[in-house]
Length: 290
Image (cartoon, rainbow, N blue to C red; front, side):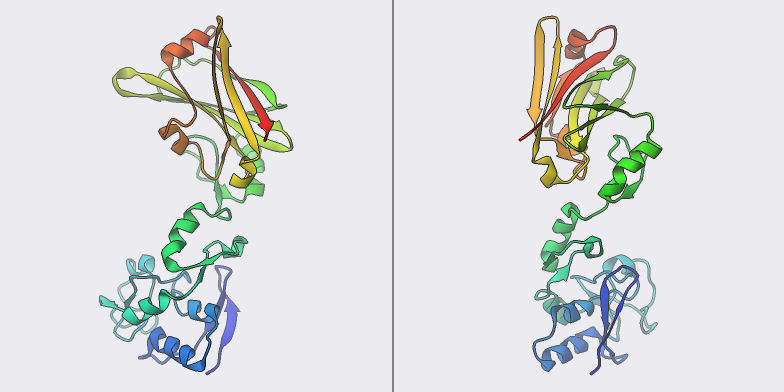
């Protein structure tokens, strides 16, 4: 049996194993096992979807000839892409059994992720993988940009030019016109310790007209880098002080999960008015290294 290897459009290497039209990958898996000590990457390649080159993972469905396709592509097809026969709803239990022993590469392996893992752990890992693309960190859903961490700052400077950047570890974040109706976001960048931080103040409309403010800091960096810093937000005025200290969030996590959990500086309209000056609210922001 001959093996040939080439690189697919998704960036991962693919092993092509000649299979008879009525054999399917299950027979190829058996042939590899019979050959003795099959290579894990060769086994993993048997699960590659012929349409998108992602992996077909359990539950694995096959056509009448034994060819498999991933679940995502299965929903879009009416015939087998390999033999053009009907897809049907036949479960390939043999391939599912093999899949439970194979270590699959992360879908972001072409971006540098070295992890291989069982298919049962694959989805959870990929949802938090440090190598997955970064989304635009600006609050709101209007910007759909995605890219590498190294591209985030250039994207912000080119596409979000209205965002102001202040230098230093101790600055004042001035949110103007906090009495504007409806949901409003205020954003500012802070540059210190060789890193860039995004300061976000978000006002949300709650039930019965109540408005809540959420202030948080996120690092333009990885989760591991974020653990090296701490931030303090402080409202001062009229002999009152309200402060919050925490570890900045990585932009990989975003701010919405923290806001939903109130894991940030939270205050209502009445508190905001206690510290505001003519409708403008100044928040002292201090970044420190741990």
